[in-house]
Length: 313
Ligand SMILES: NC(=O)c1ccc[n+]([C@@H]2O[C@H](COP(=O)([O-])OP(=O)(O)OC[C@H]3O[C@@H](n4cnc5c(N)ncnc54)[C@H](O)[C@@H]3O)[C@@H](O)[C@H]2O)c1
Ligand SMILES: O=C(O)CC[C@@H](O)C(=O)O
Image 1 (cartoon, rainbow, N blue to C red):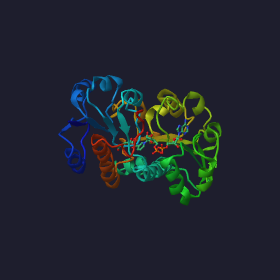
Image 2 (cartoon, rainbow, N blue to C red; image 1 turned 180 degrees about the vertical axis):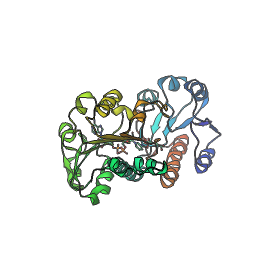
Image 3 (spheres, helix red, strand yellow; image 1 turned 60 degrees about the vertical axis):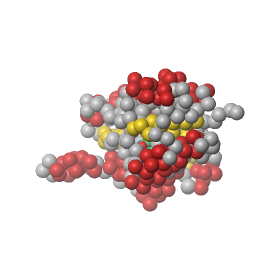
Image 4 (tube, rainbow, N blue to C red; image 1 turned 90 degrees about the vertical axis):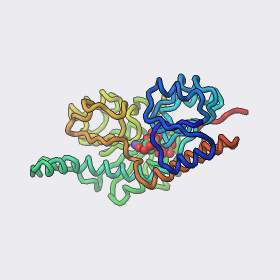
């Protein structure tokens, strides 16, 4: 039996049914997941948390397949210790996420959502919507992997200076994209727009905190379409309230969906979207096939094509 924790495109169900019965749990609580995972051979997960408790409750689990890139909602260490494959779908959503990031940059720098709200409310207060031109400004990309590189490529027509920080990418890669490699402090000091494209893990949790937000220009904007916890929420709130940061565009929240009372969403200089950077028809159709094909491979005794861990034999 295979478990799916969130609704999946029909094509995915069809592929999974070739190797067994499929049970769709719509956004299960931890309690439900711990109970349901006991007899599962495979689990396909979008946002549900596959914790140590879940993994330890499972008796037959062979694969935890992430419908996306970031595996921060899966306890990869425990899965690895127990010989369970964890897979993801790298690069497939990178173009859509990069396109969306460019959209967020334009939206926040040119106050597009406020303009839409005003006109729908029958208002015409153009003077309150003075934006920032991108030409000649500096874009700072933190995390220069699949998405970060595509953001650099897609923004090139806007004639910005592009700098990036990524300690794990070779200098040649930055040269290839015409991007200046800098350290994090330089990026925070010099960027007019800072955009995050790195995974959430022990090293990156809270990477952008009080100290870092005191370095940024007060005219700068922060874009986060990576993971919420990379930025310390209360440090971000203070920076925005005290106008030490001009604005933020955020696609990811620590509790999704966020409460309508989330203090970040109450701020006029914050744009929020419901984790939709990868939500295009093209991406969803490709992801579902890749993620389910790996489940089939593992259940047929083959090595998956997109493992994020390994199992010692
Ligand atoms: N909002 C969404 O819908 C959405 C969609 C896709 C991905 N994401 C998030 O975006 C992240 C990046 O995706 P990707 O496809 O570019 O992944 P990727 O693995 O291709 O690139 C991530 C890059 O981050 C770098 N990195 C790691 N630790 C770092 C650190 N401490 N400082 C700077 N750079 C560091 C890595 O070297 C790598 O180059 C994912 O992990 C996921 O959390 C969000
Ligand atoms: O499923 C989605 O649309 C989001 C997944 C995204 O956050 C990812 O890590 O790839």
